[in-house]
Amino acid sequence: MKLLLCEDEDKMRELLKRFLENEGYSVVEASDGEEALEKFYEEKLDLAILDWMMPKMNGLEVAQAMKRERNIKILMLTAKNMPEDEVEALVAGVDDYLAKPFHAQVLLVRVAKLLGVIKQDIKQPLVFVPNEKRVLLHDQELELTKREYDMLYYLYQNQGQALTREQILLSVWGLDHENDERTVDSFIRMLRDKLGKEFIQTVYGTGYRFELPKK
Image 1: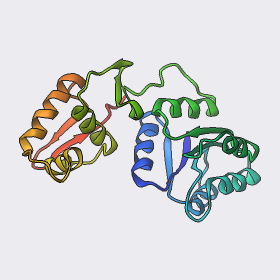
Image 2: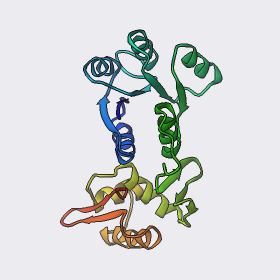
Image 3: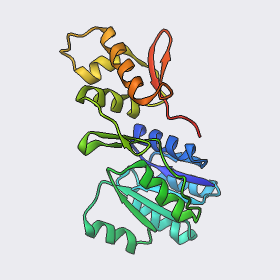
């Protein structure tokens, strides 16, 4: 099935695309409302995932334009999380509404339900609870120090990218850190001991890359 994913934040869009593709969906991307409508007219789509607050046209305007054309299923993603916002979106014809921040697994279940393909095995192996700085691996909580969590979350947010040790040091320890690159290697070893070796790959000559295992 083919989905339209419209999100103006590049990192968020890439992360969501990976989650969806890992579930077997084909994903068409757009970074603003006008591009979303262009893709809607060009592609045969089964569902549209729209961010509400986007450049050029907001998600609600895009949803209304799509619904006037045909009854495509629409899931709205937004940081607008007041009850009146949800009511406004649903009255406008949006089929489902998900406020940020959200768990990837919740998004996947909502998408599958809208498409009528809900199944029991929709599950990401790694689930972050950013507000509580917790991580679940196969539904079991990982015992991580604050620094381990910060490093893992940074890798996860940049999954698929080869990150240098210096990038990791600056992002996790800050500009005034006094550590050397061996510190990163030590923390990677500790994370691999807790996660397993399949999540964090060594990129020789560069550093490390995080990848969710393919199903």
